[in-house]
Image (cartoon, rainbow, N blue to C red; front, side):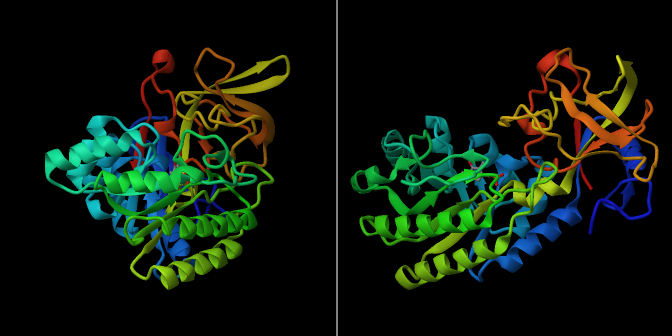
Length: 401
Ligand SMILES: *Cc1c(COP(=O)(O)O)cnc(C)c1O
C-alpha cells in the first residue's frame, strides 16, 4: 500500500486523487492522514512484537481527535502527557486502566484529574508523591503510580535524548530506591516502571542495546519495590526516515531484544505487563501536508515557489523543530508526479521571515500557481507542533481519509 500509484500523475490519499481531496477539504493548506496506512503499519508492528507485549500510542505525536479515535481500538493503550491529551484519550474511548500519564511538570489539577480518571501516573518527581497522596485521600480512590526512571546510560545516535545524564525527565536511577521507600510511606499504589531514553532513533542495534540495559535496570530496581512489579513501559523511540539517505530502521535486533526482555519479565514477574509506546513510527509516514502554490518567482536566477502553507503549520519541515542542520523533507508536486519537466526550486511559505522554508534547492516538477506542493512523512509532529498563530495566517485543516 502506498500514497503513490505507479503510472498516475496525481498522488492519491485513501484512494482519492489529491486535487479532489483538496476540493473536499475546501481549503489549502491541510494535513491528510491515511487510515489504511496507519492500520497497516500497526499490523506490521504487531507482527514483529513478541506475543504478550503491549503496544501503546503516544498521543503527542498526533493528537487529532478523529485519528486518536481511530487508533484506539488498534492498540492496547495510550500514553498522554497533559490533561488535554488525557481528555482526548478518554473522549476517544480509551480504557482508563490502559492510559499512562507522563510529563516532567504535572500541575496539581492534572494530578487530581488523572487520579479521578483512574489512569496510571508516571511519577517524575518527589513533589508529585505528596500531591498524589492528597488527591487519593480527597477522592477516595487509589493513586496508581509507576516511576519514570532517568537511566544511568544514554541512547547513542538518538534524534532527541530524553534519558541518561542530567535530565528534567524522570528520576535518576540512583535515587529510585529512596523514592520507592517514600512512595510506600505515602501509601501510593506502585505498579511499575517507565524508561524513555529518546526519540527518532534509526539504529536497530542501538535500540536493542538500550532495551536490554533498560530491562536490566528495571529488574534490579524492582528488588526494592514496595509491591510486585505489574507494569514495565520500556519506551520506544523508533525513528522514521525523513531526509534523503536516511535508512529505514531494522527491526530485527529490536524484536529480538524485546523477546528477551519479555522472557525476563515473565520469568521474574509473571503478573507484569510489558509495554512499548510508539508515536511517530505508527503515524508519521501515513500523513502528508498539502499547500497550494501562490506564486512562482525568479530572483537572480533562483526559482522560488511561494505557497499558502509554511513553517507556522509545519515547523519540522522548515527545520526548526529540533534539527541542528536544515535538511529537506521529501517534497513532491502532488499533481505532477510524472512530469519530465523539472527544475531546482526553493519552496517557501507566506511568512515574512527567512525561516519560512519548506524545501531548499530541491529538484521538483516545474510548478505553476494553483499546483499542490506535498510534504511527505508529515503524519507526526505537524499541526500541533507548529506555531500556527505566528503572523496571523488562518489555521490549516486536518482530515483523516
Ligand atoms: C515523545 C514521547 C514519545 C513518542 O515519541 P516518538 O518519537 O513519536 O515515538 C513516547 N514516549 C514519551 C515519554 C515521549 O516523551
